[in-house]
Length: 382
View 1 (cartoon, one colour):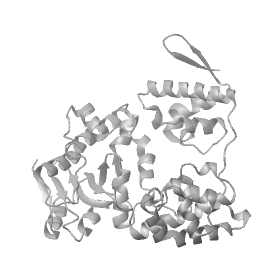
View 2 (cartoon, one colour):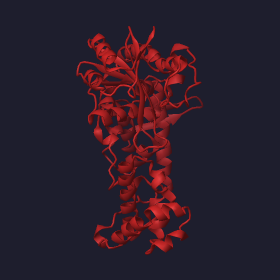
View 3 (cartoon, helix red, strand yellow):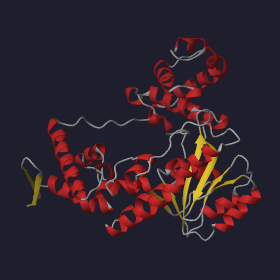
View 4 (cartoon, helix red, strand yellow):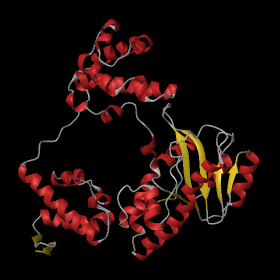
């Protein structure tokens, strides 16, 4: 199919009118975020069985006609690894489209692999090798070359074929319903909104701090997050994680002490030193009962570790029998939580429970016996 390049409001309105009766649309985006906090939307690729278009959001000032179309409740949007594309849509409209299909998620329960990339899935299922020449292109630059547009178009051209094929496979294997909750979870806005007050929990190394140190880290992380948002700059440009950890650990009280923090550049001290000291000072005044707590679970015993190993083996067995990638059902961390007695687990709900979860709980409760030979594991209800 010829690839349309949509770079005017008039052309966009006409294009949306042409595809408004589509039952589904394949969507992909090109964006950059190396120098910004928020991703910079550079191109939107859209396709159905009849047409492929590359919409230029840099040239077009009003994307309302397209957004109105994409959010229609009777249109399913088809993505591969949807989260980053959905983040962009959320930033544009402050809400998420209702009906989604993600070929990467579908791949996990069709036996195509966990976290499989688009190129690998296209090669595996359609025997097409995609050109990777423009994977690192600067999509903010104009004009876009014909080669770039073809490269971008391929991201939805084959997504259409994958959608038809994988939808049919899911229906044939009676697994279409399995993914409804997973797809619905993609439309949860909490996945795309950073909370400055809790972002400190994602900082690697926070577990080595305690008491007032965590209070300092929490407030530094909140300050950094808000500053990054306001200035639309990457977090690491404001303060690197390792610098924040040292600031929380040593809690300097005067700007001149900041030079002793490894990795904190002179220009950062000049620009933000006073603000950093103010944040630290305020955090140190936090009453102890308000200090954040990072709960650490009790170490597992050797026997519990052995139980987890056994459950992981059973997980792989039952997933292999269903041609499902094990990580689509549960991770080792999920199995550890199960052993610790936690109940609020995806493994214990829906299709995951039906095909694997109940076997694992039966094994723990002694209602499933396990034997083995050199070829496979055998299970029997007790």
